[in-house]
Image (cartoon, rainbow, N blue to C red; front, side, top):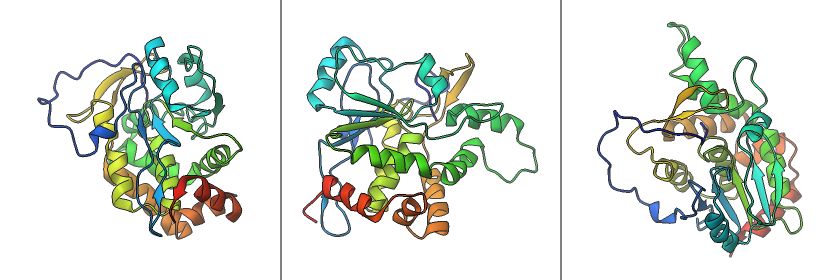
Length: 275
């Protein structure tokens, strides 16, 4: 979880560490954090996810005119925004003349007394957790909750990506680590990318967001300062484990939530080469 705005440093962080493997995949665009290509990974059937068609990032709410010039080089036709309606009002995406279709597909429903932003909701959950509650922390609960609720919006995202002329596309939430993380993980897994590659891509958000040494504080959509936590690979493992326990595979998860076999085949045709 998630949000981008008004981040301030955590003065208790340790000295910087060396960039992790894969950090060279991060694309430098002013005002767009955590941007990278979701392609390049091998698949179980001997194919490879095509480069230059599917990107992931934080929101475009801080996109600068210079950044828009660089982003234009990606040729984006579609931007899928996974944030809540409340977040969109507070932090609208900027275009600076870029021509793309902007599609709103909130990953989570509004959460009573909290937020549809996983980071904010997790923080509220932790504050109200009872001592006898076995849940490790708020983010553990949020990833488990996303396994229960995120199926329909992920299917809707795939349908948007497979629409005629939709690619290249960018998928983002607030900072591109939790909601974007599970969405891209499901897509890559359903296409046959190995868990190790999916996990490494998921973890790369810590480098993309300056979270390698611990939390960074931000002001959420309610004006409250909260910690933006580093992603932890065990959270994605929890999400996928729950999906697999119920549906066998991520493809089964997508079918359960309404994706047709032909639609998944179309996604594969568009995104996988050499299979």
